[in-house]
Length: 240
Image 1 (cartoon, helix red, strand yellow):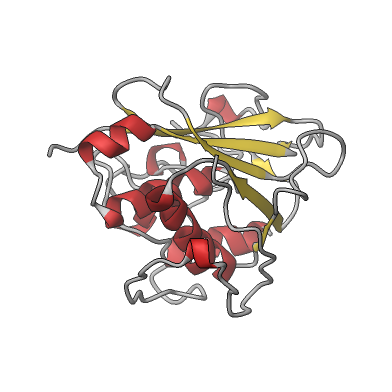
Image 2 (image 1 turned 180 degrees about the vertical axis):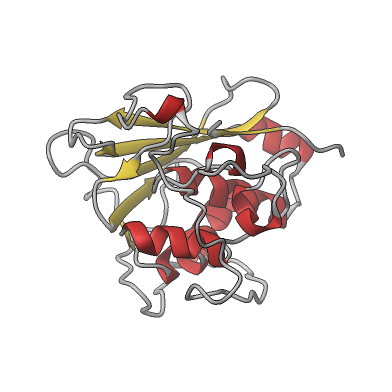
């Protein structure tokens, strides 16, 4: 399953800036936010789940079908390359900060190279589409925090040319307006699906969705873990 559901009680675009891998970010004033210190794993040390395949395609996801499902309400596909261009529209300051946090301090520490597109650079059609568009959607089911879908599977081979990541903004505002860790965890999980990362039960061999090894990709319940872990990083680097 590729949407972040509830299992727990309780247009301002992303900064117009270029960001190159492992280079100190240059923040526009409108994007300054307080970031708590975080420990980031930048390689795959001992403890990664070697022998467990958690990257699309998998025998335990879509019956082993390796086709990317364009316009599926919740589908995982591979990115079309390790160069991951991203753009966000009207997320609000908190989810914008959570999304930038996960991109900079999780995905950009792997072999994925995150590049932020500005308003003048974002592309919605053609052969050089922006890889991920982040936006809010209050039409998501009431028990869903976020969802991703592939909007263009033209590259073939299980790859997607453009993903949409949708956040349930009203639900965030009503239920977790100040839960920074959970906001980051949801951003991390939905972004993970845009590079082909799967949940535990969809892995091969199948694992518990609650397995701590899956870090921000854990579900049932959604784990308030704001970053990737050694297993996630090992899987992404192995693919890209």
